[in-house]
Length: 276
Image 1 (tube, rainbow, N blue to C red):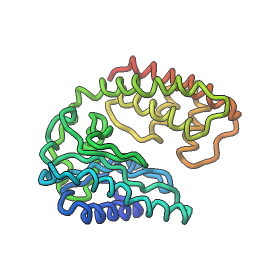
Image 2: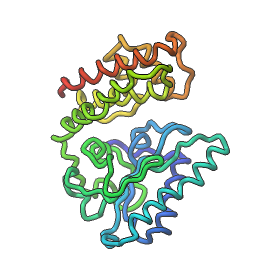
Image 3: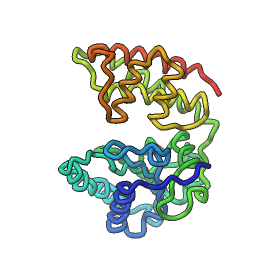
Protein backbone atom coordinates (compact mmCIF):
# COMPACT_ATOMS: atom_id res chain seq x y z
CA UNK A 1 0.00 0.00 0.00
CA UNK A 2 1.40 3.38 -1.02
CA UNK A 3 1.37 6.24 1.50
CA UNK A 4 -1.42 8.79 0.93
CA UNK A 5 -0.53 11.44 -1.63
CA UNK A 6 -1.46 15.03 -0.67
CA UNK A 7 -4.05 16.53 -2.98
CA UNK A 8 -2.91 19.59 -4.96
CA UNK A 9 -4.96 22.69 -4.17
CA UNK A 10 -6.73 22.80 -7.53
CA UNK A 11 -7.68 19.14 -7.11
CA UNK A 12 -9.11 19.85 -3.66
CA UNK A 13 -11.18 22.72 -5.05
CA UNK A 14 -12.37 20.72 -8.07
CA UNK A 15 -13.41 17.69 -5.99
CA UNK A 16 -15.08 19.91 -3.38
CA UNK A 17 -17.06 21.62 -6.15
CA UNK A 18 -17.98 18.22 -7.62
CA UNK A 19 -19.21 16.92 -4.26
CA UNK A 20 -21.13 20.09 -3.50
CA UNK A 21 -23.02 19.78 -6.78
CA UNK A 22 -23.50 16.03 -6.29
CA UNK A 23 -25.03 16.60 -2.86
CA UNK A 24 -27.42 19.15 -4.33
CA UNK A 25 -28.46 17.04 -7.34
CA UNK A 26 -28.40 13.64 -5.58
CA UNK A 27 -28.90 14.30 -1.87
CA UNK A 28 -27.42 11.53 0.25
CA UNK A 29 -26.39 9.45 -2.77
CA UNK A 30 -22.59 9.77 -2.66
CA UNK A 31 -21.44 7.71 0.32
CA UNK A 32 -17.78 7.24 -0.64
CA UNK A 33 -15.41 8.90 -3.09
CA UNK A 34 -11.75 8.22 -3.86
CA UNK A 35 -9.28 9.89 -6.22
CA UNK A 36 -7.16 7.66 -8.44
CA UNK A 37 -5.21 8.21 -11.68
CA UNK A 38 -2.34 10.65 -11.95
CA UNK A 39 -3.16 12.26 -8.60
CA UNK A 40 -2.84 8.98 -6.72
CA UNK A 41 0.31 8.11 -8.67
CA UNK A 42 1.94 11.40 -7.66
CA UNK A 43 2.06 12.50 -11.29
CA UNK A 44 -0.61 15.20 -11.44
CA UNK A 45 0.30 18.12 -13.72
CA UNK A 46 -1.54 21.40 -13.16
CA UNK A 47 -2.94 22.66 -16.44
CA UNK A 48 -2.74 19.22 -18.03
CA UNK A 49 -4.10 16.35 -15.92
CA UNK A 50 -7.68 15.27 -15.36
CA UNK A 51 -8.95 14.05 -11.99
CA UNK A 52 -10.12 10.43 -11.90
CA UNK A 53 -12.78 9.61 -9.33
CA UNK A 54 -14.42 6.40 -8.19
CA UNK A 55 -17.79 7.26 -6.68
CA UNK A 56 -19.87 4.91 -4.52
CA UNK A 57 -23.64 5.46 -4.54
CA UNK A 58 -26.17 4.55 -1.86
CA UNK A 59 -28.35 1.64 -2.99
CA UNK A 60 -31.43 3.56 -1.90
CA UNK A 61 -31.10 5.37 -5.22
CA UNK A 62 -31.56 2.12 -7.16
CA UNK A 63 -34.68 2.18 -9.28
CA UNK A 64 -34.90 5.98 -9.34
CA UNK A 65 -36.03 6.91 -12.83
CA UNK A 66 -34.29 10.27 -12.59
CA UNK A 67 -30.90 8.88 -11.45
CA UNK A 68 -29.19 8.90 -14.85
CA UNK A 69 -30.62 12.31 -15.70
CA UNK A 70 -29.23 13.70 -12.44
CA UNK A 71 -25.81 12.13 -13.08
CA UNK A 72 -25.83 13.74 -16.53
CA UNK A 73 -26.52 17.09 -14.90
CA UNK A 74 -23.65 16.49 -12.48
CA UNK A 75 -21.40 15.87 -15.48
CA UNK A 76 -22.62 19.01 -17.25
CA UNK A 77 -22.22 21.09 -14.10
CA UNK A 78 -18.47 21.16 -14.64
CA UNK A 79 -18.70 23.06 -17.92
CA UNK A 80 -18.95 26.60 -16.44
CA UNK A 81 -15.95 25.99 -14.18
CA UNK A 82 -13.91 24.60 -17.07
CA UNK A 83 -14.82 27.56 -19.28
CA UNK A 84 -13.80 29.87 -16.46
CA UNK A 85 -10.41 28.21 -16.30
CA UNK A 86 -9.98 28.60 -20.06
CA UNK A 87 -10.82 32.30 -19.87
CA UNK A 88 -8.16 32.69 -17.18
CA UNK A 89 -5.66 30.70 -19.34
CA UNK A 90 -5.46 27.95 -16.71
CA UNK A 91 -6.01 25.09 -19.15
CA UNK A 92 -8.66 22.38 -19.05
CA UNK A 93 -7.14 20.27 -16.29
CA UNK A 94 -8.95 19.58 -13.02
CA UNK A 95 -11.86 18.07 -14.92
CA UNK A 96 -13.47 15.38 -12.78
CA UNK A 97 -13.86 12.09 -14.69
CA UNK A 98 -15.98 9.73 -12.63
CA UNK A 99 -17.04 6.09 -12.48
CA UNK A 100 -20.13 5.32 -10.39
CA UNK A 101 -20.79 2.00 -8.66
CA UNK A 102 -23.30 0.79 -6.06
CA UNK A 103 -22.30 0.45 -2.42
CA UNK A 104 -23.59 -3.13 -2.35
CA UNK A 105 -21.19 -4.11 -5.16
CA UNK A 106 -17.87 -2.69 -3.91
CA UNK A 107 -16.72 -6.05 -2.56
CA UNK A 108 -17.66 -8.02 -5.67
CA UNK A 109 -14.90 -9.23 -8.03
CA UNK A 110 -14.38 -6.28 -10.38
CA UNK A 111 -15.52 -8.27 -13.42
CA UNK A 112 -18.91 -8.81 -11.75
CA UNK A 113 -19.59 -5.16 -10.89
CA UNK A 114 -22.34 -3.48 -12.89
CA UNK A 115 -21.34 0.20 -13.23
CA UNK A 116 -24.10 2.76 -12.80
CA UNK A 117 -22.56 5.27 -15.21
CA UNK A 118 -19.36 7.14 -16.02
CA UNK A 119 -18.13 10.29 -17.68
CA UNK A 120 -14.76 11.31 -19.10
CA UNK A 121 -14.25 14.69 -20.69
CA UNK A 122 -17.33 15.49 -22.75
CA UNK A 123 -18.54 11.85 -22.88
CA UNK A 124 -21.19 10.37 -20.60
CA UNK A 125 -22.18 6.70 -20.57
CA UNK A 126 -25.01 5.07 -18.67
CA UNK A 127 -24.44 1.56 -17.27
CA UNK A 128 -20.82 1.53 -18.47
CA UNK A 129 -17.48 2.54 -16.95
CA UNK A 130 -14.20 1.69 -18.66
CA UNK A 131 -12.27 2.32 -15.45
CA UNK A 132 -14.08 -0.48 -13.61
CA UNK A 133 -11.49 -3.07 -14.61
CA UNK A 134 -8.68 -5.11 -12.98
CA UNK A 135 -5.94 -2.55 -13.75
CA UNK A 136 -7.81 0.45 -12.38
CA UNK A 137 -8.98 -1.55 -9.35
CA UNK A 138 -5.35 -2.49 -8.63
CA UNK A 139 -4.46 1.20 -8.81
CA UNK A 140 -7.37 2.06 -6.52
CA UNK A 141 -6.38 -0.58 -3.95
CA UNK A 142 -2.70 0.39 -3.88
CA UNK A 143 -2.98 4.17 -4.01
CA UNK A 144 -6.57 5.45 -4.05
CA UNK A 145 -7.00 8.61 -1.96
CA UNK A 146 -10.15 8.80 0.15
CA UNK A 147 -11.98 12.11 0.05
CA UNK A 148 -15.33 11.04 1.46
CA UNK A 149 -16.52 8.05 3.44
CA UNK A 150 -14.61 4.89 4.22
CA UNK A 151 -10.93 4.40 3.59
CA UNK A 152 -10.46 2.54 0.33
CA UNK A 153 -9.08 -0.46 2.26
CA UNK A 154 -12.51 -0.79 3.90
CA UNK A 155 -14.28 -1.06 0.54
CA UNK A 156 -13.03 -4.68 0.40
CA UNK A 157 -12.29 -4.38 -3.32
CA UNK A 158 -11.40 -7.46 -5.35
CA UNK A 159 -9.25 -6.43 -8.35
CA UNK A 160 -9.03 -10.06 -9.53
CA UNK A 161 -5.25 -9.99 -9.89
CA UNK A 162 -5.25 -13.08 -12.11
CA UNK A 163 -7.28 -11.17 -14.70
CA UNK A 164 -5.02 -8.13 -14.89
CA UNK A 165 -2.55 -9.47 -17.49
CA UNK A 166 -5.28 -10.97 -19.74
CA UNK A 167 -7.19 -7.67 -19.54
CA UNK A 168 -4.09 -5.68 -20.54
CA UNK A 169 -3.37 -8.00 -23.47
CA UNK A 170 -6.96 -7.68 -24.66
CA UNK A 171 -6.76 -3.91 -24.40
CA UNK A 172 -3.54 -3.88 -26.42
CA UNK A 173 -5.10 -6.06 -29.10
CA UNK A 174 -8.50 -4.41 -29.22
CA UNK A 175 -7.51 -0.75 -28.94
CA UNK A 176 -3.81 0.03 -29.17
CA UNK A 177 -2.85 -2.24 -32.09
CA UNK A 178 -5.70 -0.93 -34.30
CA UNK A 179 -4.79 2.61 -33.27
CA UNK A 180 -1.23 2.03 -34.50
CA UNK A 181 -2.57 0.95 -37.90
CA UNK A 182 -4.96 3.89 -38.00
CA UNK A 183 -2.08 6.25 -37.26
CA UNK A 184 -0.34 5.15 -40.48
CA UNK A 185 -2.85 7.07 -42.57
CA UNK A 186 -2.85 10.82 -43.08
CA UNK A 187 -0.94 13.25 -45.22
CA UNK A 188 -0.36 15.94 -42.63
CA UNK A 189 2.17 15.60 -39.80
CA UNK A 190 0.63 14.30 -36.58
CA UNK A 191 0.50 16.45 -33.50
CA UNK A 192 2.68 15.93 -30.46
CA UNK A 193 -0.46 15.01 -28.48
CA UNK A 194 -0.99 12.03 -30.82
CA UNK A 195 2.63 10.99 -30.33
CA UNK A 196 2.22 11.16 -26.56
CA UNK A 197 -1.04 9.19 -26.52
CA UNK A 198 0.14 6.58 -28.99
CA UNK A 199 3.42 5.83 -27.24
CA UNK A 200 2.93 6.34 -23.53
CA UNK A 201 -0.30 4.33 -23.37
CA UNK A 202 1.27 1.12 -24.74
CA UNK A 203 4.38 1.79 -22.65
CA UNK A 204 2.21 1.80 -19.50
CA UNK A 205 0.61 -1.47 -20.58
CA UNK A 206 4.04 -3.00 -21.23
CA UNK A 207 5.21 -1.98 -17.76
CA UNK A 208 2.13 -3.48 -16.12
CA UNK A 209 2.66 -6.79 -17.91
CA UNK A 210 6.33 -7.01 -16.97
CA UNK A 211 6.22 -5.58 -13.43
CA UNK A 212 2.65 -6.14 -12.25
CA UNK A 213 2.40 -2.48 -11.27
CA UNK A 214 0.48 0.49 -12.66
CA UNK A 215 2.68 3.50 -13.38
CA UNK A 216 2.15 7.06 -14.57
CA UNK A 217 2.66 8.23 -18.15
CA UNK A 218 5.84 10.05 -17.18
CA UNK A 219 7.24 6.92 -15.55
CA UNK A 220 6.14 4.93 -18.60
CA UNK A 221 8.13 7.25 -20.83
CA UNK A 222 11.26 6.73 -18.74
CA UNK A 223 10.58 2.99 -18.70
CA UNK A 224 10.24 2.91 -22.49
CA UNK A 225 13.48 4.85 -22.96
CA UNK A 226 15.29 2.10 -21.05
CA UNK A 227 13.48 -0.80 -22.75
CA UNK A 228 13.43 0.61 -26.26
CA UNK A 229 16.41 2.98 -26.62
CA UNK A 230 16.21 2.65 -30.41
CA UNK A 231 13.01 4.72 -30.24
CA UNK A 232 14.44 7.39 -27.91
CA UNK A 233 14.03 10.36 -30.30
CA UNK A 234 10.27 9.93 -30.77
CA UNK A 235 9.78 8.93 -27.12
CA UNK A 236 11.39 12.23 -26.15
CA UNK A 237 8.79 14.02 -28.29
CA UNK A 238 6.04 12.21 -26.34
CA UNK A 239 7.59 13.09 -22.98
CA UNK A 240 8.14 16.71 -23.98
CA UNK A 241 4.45 17.11 -24.81
CA UNK A 242 3.43 15.41 -21.57
CA UNK A 243 5.65 17.78 -19.60
CA UNK A 244 4.45 20.82 -21.60
CA UNK A 245 7.93 21.42 -22.97
CA UNK A 246 9.04 22.33 -26.47
CA UNK A 247 9.61 19.20 -28.58
CA UNK A 248 13.24 18.29 -29.24
CA UNK A 249 14.54 19.48 -32.58
CA UNK A 250 16.43 16.31 -33.53
CA UNK A 251 13.44 15.13 -35.58
CA UNK A 252 11.46 16.85 -38.30
CA UNK A 253 7.70 16.86 -37.71
CA UNK A 254 7.25 14.98 -40.96
CA UNK A 255 9.07 12.05 -39.32
CA UNK A 256 6.82 11.83 -36.27
CA UNK A 257 4.04 9.73 -37.82
CA UNK A 258 6.23 6.96 -39.19
CA UNK A 259 8.42 6.78 -36.10
CA UNK A 260 5.39 6.73 -33.80
CA UNK A 261 3.80 3.85 -35.70
CA UNK A 262 7.03 1.86 -35.75
CA UNK A 263 7.57 2.35 -32.02
CA UNK A 264 3.94 1.55 -31.19
CA UNK A 265 4.07 -1.70 -33.15
CA UNK A 266 7.27 -2.81 -31.47
CA UNK A 267 6.19 -1.91 -27.94
CA UNK A 268 2.81 -3.62 -28.42
CA UNK A 269 4.31 -6.75 -29.98
CA UNK A 270 6.89 -7.05 -27.21
CA UNK A 271 4.26 -6.47 -24.53
CA UNK A 272 2.05 -9.23 -25.91
CA UNK A 273 4.87 -11.74 -25.40
CA UNK A 274 5.96 -10.39 -21.98
CA UNK A 275 5.30 -12.11 -18.67
CA UNK A 276 6.09 -11.32 -15.05
